[in-house]
Image (tube, rainbow, N blue to C red):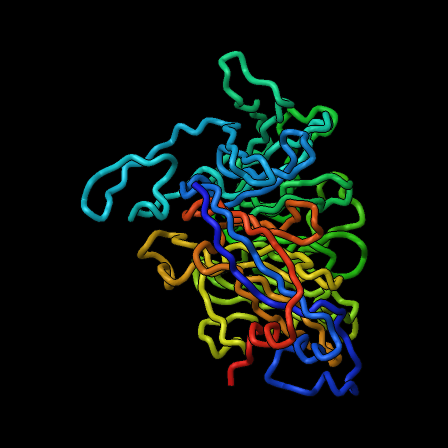
Length: 464
């Protein structure tokens, strides 16, 4: 089942960063910073075409890759992958035998494929919290790795290169990757600088990362602890990595600080701890995907994080230095009430983020939204609020402050524990992929020219 919905936002298509003396830069303080230059700019309408691949609940995260070698990007989530570019043909790459009994509004009991999700009324979890894709065995075909429920083992699935099994199925061969992969937002990327992706997470009480044996990729991965054993557990929230101190090496970011990568990783040394309360607290406090990026262009990398993925709060931490000592100044992007955001945006449970240059201006923006029914229809904060999906445009001001302009992509999808921004159709525009309890969605990013009047009406307005 597929449905289409057009969700529209408007942006102006030239580079930002005029000088403070420009009349356009101060003409209208009630408009977003980019809107003030529209008098000399080409106005461009950006819209997202919504495609619902399924309304079944199979996963909390989805990803992309060219799985059939036809030159077109496909989408994977749960036990399935869908052929691009229209995502109408579905393939089962691992067993999809799970079914769930639910009660309809009239009391009738029915059995649905997958887990309960939005079709039911009970809290339920899938066996796929995050999904990524990579050619693990170097055969030129993209494979899939599934991060299951926190605390379980992660497996990668070997692409059969178009061949079917003897029984006629298309199930891919599973290979154990990471034993006991903990954390609700584990990452997939190169933290050790060898040019290959790692699993960045915590496991059995240690922070660290797991690496594949690239000469024998079918073997289980090797775990590299970077911390002493601590209280980190399978439901710990928040992981990131990036170069905080400017030494060219990626550091490990977590809710209570950052861990400095040493010059040598031989024999798995303990990394130096730098405590800082990025998302400190107990219970569900902590980040989701945590990102390191120089948002205000001052030459120092900052940190972007959720404060509580089951509550409220998105913050960017501006890095500052005093006599060489590194610290951070918090700046709220979304708080627990509309007044905390200059455009009045407020939503809870931002359990997934992705960093992407959405409008092609050379500056990284980010995508996030509300996780739908993280703990069911009666759990957490405002569980039944609109399942909003936003992208936030990063605007760098001359005084090194930053404005994050919220553009609504959709209000009936949200995010899971993962949201993916990537170009699916090769047009140079990042699209968005979502998997959660409402199903699996693709949002195709499109553009067209518009008048200044139409553009101006669609801009988010500052709330007075």
